[in-house]
Image 1 (cartoon, rainbow, N blue to C red):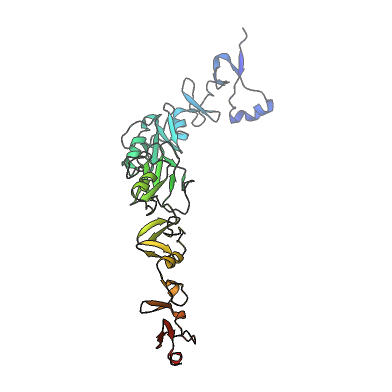
Image 2 (image 1 turned 180 degrees about the vertical axis):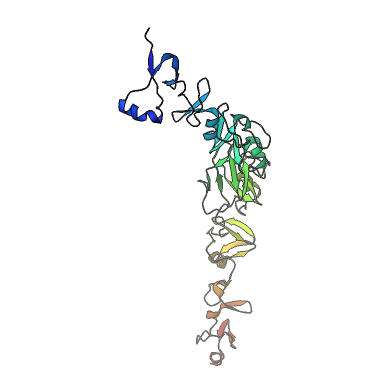
Length: 349
């Protein structure tokens, strides 16, 4: 019977290289003398470890870069060392890796509570790995309201910005909008809160994305601030949000601070008061001011105007002159003639 023959895939020994290159023929092997590995046929003596030449027939081996390696050589050359136990991670174990670090499956656990982290969330810190609970307990930022940590990677990606309905000139209107992934985290003046813990100091309701007003390092929602703390106009009792004026320690809206008689706005006008009521210069002069005996106009005193009084009669300084020669009598002796002022010279004539 004719024997079946195969071609050996292993390179021939050095003393046969020249002959094989000349013949350019593979070495033939008989069916009883070969083994099959890696989809190739080998003499039994030729199937050996690529590193140490150990015969691999009936032995476990691992193929690396298309070459077979015995288990000890593979571990020595290619296996990673475990970060925890420092031993090689052999082919019989799972190699769990994170950022070029490797662990046996049974060594991959929290450095504090020793809980297995296989298929569990974990967090690295200072070259150690922690389960999510231990990491939050030791390192996570904490809410200034309840003291509990922010869990689940509360990452800020928003910014503080003025509320679209508020006037940018109002220094107390500020909206804190911090959109976050997972649990929301609000920050203000170096403090941080869970969404449900960032509450109005008065009504204790969460502020969330609404406007608030800082007060004593705490936040007050707009309705509570207007109800309890905001200045209110002395005339209409409405909240003064902007542009108010103060008179005699009382706040007013600019449009509410008007002349008692003619209702003219007084915010940028000369005015005075009578019986605690404000009046513009014209109305005050018309209603209450003394009248000059010469020009009959009101003597208001606005702008530093000086006046002269004598026996219940009054004159502007510029009007206190001799009725005949028009010489000023301010600071000089004068005569009265039927209510008229005369200088001594005109009086003698």
